[in-house]
Image (tube, rainbow, N blue to C red):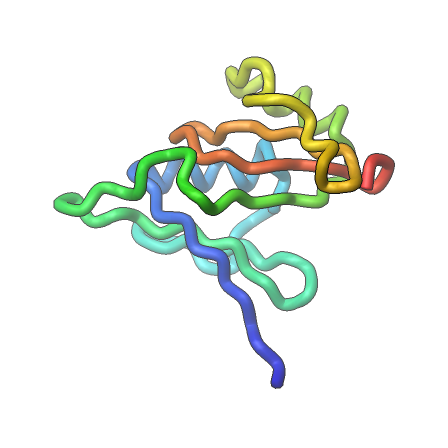
Length: 121
């Protein structure tokens, strides 16, 4: 059975989150882009989606059980973009327990994600 996987993150400010994941994380232009749904196509048929939370139903609090790991081209280049948009030091410590070097960061709303690159995986 083939399955298409969409990872969906509910957010309060979809415009800010769209810009962050497009420009800082480097996911590129979304394949679907509206004021309620943004979809980034990833390798292997997977999509990373942002969904605008309903005004009367705020998104889950940051630091929930789900985190995302992005394999990116360069941790060094990502770090430059992250700091340029106002990000400080990474949240927590490098995640060596996963068998490779990944670093955890918060997005603009405090949702945690991890990044690693080919050199560290």
